[in-house]
Image (cartoon, rainbow, N blue to C red):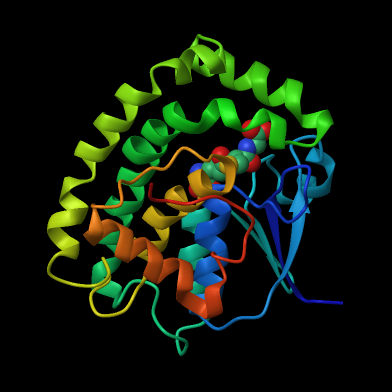
Length: 235
Ligand SMILES: N[C@@H](CCC(=O)N[C@@H](CS)C(=O)NCC(=O)O)C(=O)O
């Protein structure tokens, strides 16, 4: 029995792991070179993670330790496995990476959500579909279809919002510098989420700086993210 387990959100197809937060943790574990058994979890499986004292994934079980919340998991891995490659570059950089994580949570994910959310219900296990629609429509105050009806406008806002990434990645291959670190995973998790649920491309093919950055992360760790069922990130 594996001593390290990551519970990840899955669709009807257990291979469709689509949570942006779970991808962060999965890539962080790969970055640290830690083996993990990933367990598909669905919205109706609340009981399966009740031991964590809350109801959201990712949840990491590492021996006797249980950690939830992707940022907490990153900090836990950094503290517990200091000899493995650093997730933050160095301890002094963690606060700046926390800012990038917060930007992805509060700006990037809500914007992407308005582009892809209507594509999610058909991919969910039948038992999850009503719950997802009800809770997300309450959040938006509109049907998922109404939210995505203006996706052509939302995508323009999203693409403008990505300008700081382009300016940074023109000068270096990763947000982390010459090699990727948690800043890349915090942001790329959102791109991978969109790729896993929607055939609506987030990027245009001529957005080469971002397309190449996303390609590098899709290829990282032996193509871990690219192997997940999904669509194209760029048109
Ligand atoms: N701040 C948390 C967010 C985790 C989160 O929202 N997870 C979603 C899946 S993407 C979830 O488990 N939702 C359960 C629900 O909506 O019932 C983190 O960074 O891990």
